[in-house]
Image (cartoon, rainbow, N blue to C red; front, side):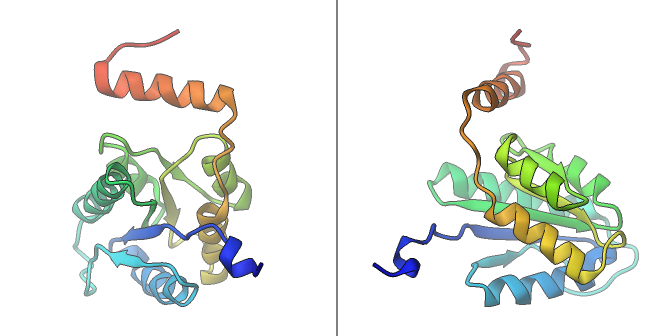
Length: 167
């Protein structure tokens, strides 16, 4: 049986940025599309040094959750100068677990331990090659499904939906 037939299907990838991440975003859209990912670009489409990231990032995050709720594998990428504000914006969407990744380990652990469904990366913090490697690590690392991680994520989800803190 060929390796291709046994390959795990690639998730749909929702990507968003602001002006500070546009070069990286364009690079990632082309690169990931070439790798066989279905990439949905939530903008912006043209450079505006005065644009604001929240609407772009929230739209991408909402699309990730909508896809996941519909049974479609999906992950998100939000980009900006540092990735911090973009992560904060994405995390305002119920069901999103956005993680700021600054190296391969933080990208992998975000998926393996936290089942993060959105990654934030600072476009001004990395070369295109470094950022691409971080994104690829995030997209290809599976969630471990270890009981302790499932339990912890469940506690976060309970708080998110009910406001109750589970000990």
